[in-house]
Length: 247
Length: 262
Image 1 (tube, rainbow over the protein chains, first blue to last red):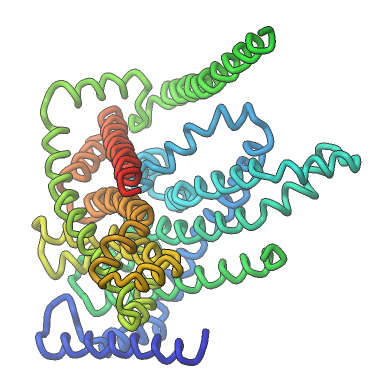
Image 2 (image 1 turned 60 degrees about the vertical axis):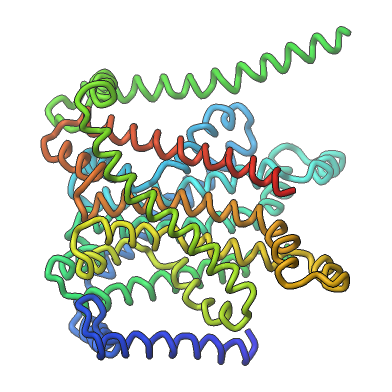
């Protein structure tokens, strides 16, 4: 990012905040409190521990759900990419599941897991796992045939070919799947918590929503925004770190 | 000849495998589901396969509850998607045409991509009450970002040499847009519109399920509260089918219109 870019981005953010502040101060709409009071509420939520206690719960469900999605998605996707019958058996369901709105399944999971952290975790998994599976499978399936042929003619067996040739060649696409999956997992954990309505950041949103407290509501949204941006930046950094050689 | 016959046979075997294997998986899943549901009769919430299908028949063919709920839900979806499509393409084109505007929008598009939309639902309710307006607004919020981003990316990815050539042959701004930029960006715009539709459907369901109990969301909540598992599962299946139908139609339209633009 050049210095000019940074100036323009900062300008855009300041302009946005200024318009927000002006609208809040001049028209006093119920849903748009001034930017400064939202920031003040944000500060209070951070300092009195309301956020830190709930953020831990949210990050816990998010982390467990994302971990299971990544682990399971990678294994299932790799097996589907390497072994044709499994691909034929499962791929219609995977692509179907990817296009069906994930939130729709929340009531079904609630029926199964009741009011527990597991409902949240399973919703996170449902949001994140399919894109990981699909990308991993496509990546393994698409390995350059010439590369494989060469490896075989140099005497590589099936396992060596999978680990030394297919896996490295598949990494860029797999990491793209992980990045998208992590983004979807953030949305999943918030939807899951809002659905349950008492746990984590989603529970706090629900509380302030019922109190019609727009200032505190927007402050929690700010927390969620920052959390999502950090998750996005981290996954992009991991992706760059592990796929740099591929450029 | 013999080779052709063998080839035929192997494609037949291949074809039957791509059909039979998924069917087998579905049957095994159905059996496990049935066993599990019968096993925990006490919980009442997980219906058997039979209960689900009879509930499905009931929902589709008798008692117009489902159709009425679908109507309510889809009314908001249609308004919101039309506004998101027109507004998103317009904003995307504007961001591609006016560089500074695009750069000013960048940080906000990044935020919109990362931010879960769901926590904004109560805010829309504070602002607009519980009519159709907040639902439409929220669905627009869910759908518009990929439409803007894809439209802009599509216009930007048009080969600069082609633009240069059109200019040097004296194309006016208007001709440049209508003859070069829009046709070049068309596939990306259609992809954005399809992604937007998928997110709009997501949004419709999330909004109704979490906050505004109307339409399909209300039906689901009601069946959950009264422990009618069969009806609950059947409603979920119906909405899933609607989503698949809409998205397949969109894909068909995308293919048609993309071919036509070429």
